Structure formats: C-alpha cells, structure tokens
Length: 230
Image (cartoon, rainbow, N blue to C red; front, top):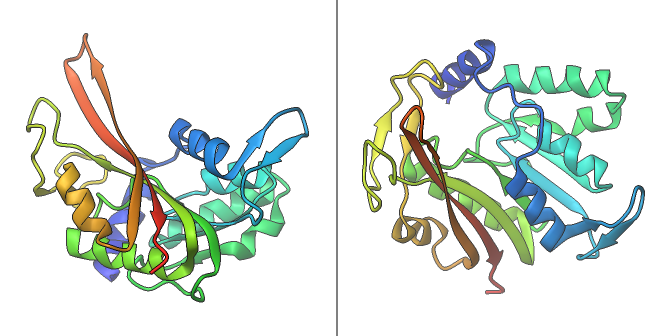
C-alpha cells in the first residue's frame, strides 16, 4: 500500500488531480436516484436516508457537492496528501463539519461498519489499480452499502486511438499525469466480472469524447448498480 500511496501522493503534489467541480454524471446520478434540487433551497428526496460514501474522494470535490445537496457525505482516499488538502479546502469554505468525515485508507479495507451507507460513489478510481484489487474494493462497497441501495462508478474503455473497443488489459501509466500508476481498461464483460453476483447493473452508459483538432479520443463507462438482497 505504501508504494501505491507514494505514487498517488506524487500525483497530487504535482497538482495533476486538482479538480474542484463535481462530475456531471455524479450530479445526474444524485438527481435521479438520491435527491433532486427543485429550487434555490428546495429539494425532493428520492430515498429516505442520506448517508453516502465517496470512495477515492481525492481533494473532496464531491464531498462538498453532496453536502450542498444536504446529504451526509464521507470520504476515503489512499493519498494522505489529498486528504490534508481536502481538510484545508473544507476549512476555507467554512465546512469544518466535514473534516472528521475524511479518512486515509485503501479500498481493500474500509473502516466502516456493515450496511452503514445509503449510497456509494466512485469517480475515476476502480480503473486506477490492478483488477484483483478493484474486486476487493467492490466487495467492501457491498459490505458497507445497505441492501437495495445504489453504487455509482466509472471506468475507462479501450475505445480510443491506441486500443480497441473490447480491450480489457492493464498498463503502467508512463505519462506525467498519474505516472507509474496502473490503468486498467474495461469492457462490459469485465464490468460484470468486477461486480459479480452481488450487484444488479441498472445503467451502463459509454460516453466518448473526441478532439477533432488534436485527434485525442477517450471513452468511459458510467455504471449504476444496485446491491442485491441476497
């Protein structure tokens, strides 16, 4: 874990992962399955409870968004540097109540009790590690998520200019952005293998972005899964 932590700390130290605004697919997920904003200070709850976990929360952009939606967010990340930065950001934004909800830790072992969360989100995390580690992480999500509740995550597809649609291998990142971390590519079969029998896939959307000018193409699967009542 120490080696992985160093790699991700370096990424944050270099400010490669300093993102301050919530991802639009997480906004869409929350609005459709958790809680919808219907006015300046009016909300329409879709589920009764509101405690959520951001797995791989980074510097906390989705924690702040969930708090603004009047939900109860918690965050965990392997990078202690990212967590410390998140605490400084929360303090600056007068959101000190969020500081104690942040934890430095691995996806392989959450410090939370069974069935303790009403939803889990994870953006750009499960494809940034070896597949076997991601499987353990999903098992931890299953453990801490309540029955019948939702899990949003996204993973990268091989559908770009350097690979092919069904490519599902793993590579060591050589570019400066997230250098020396693992990039695990997914297809639908690998997504189903990741989730196993513990989750039902509710949505699986492939979103592609292609720059006509720079000839850069990337694709990501955005998945919403529901914990099965086994």
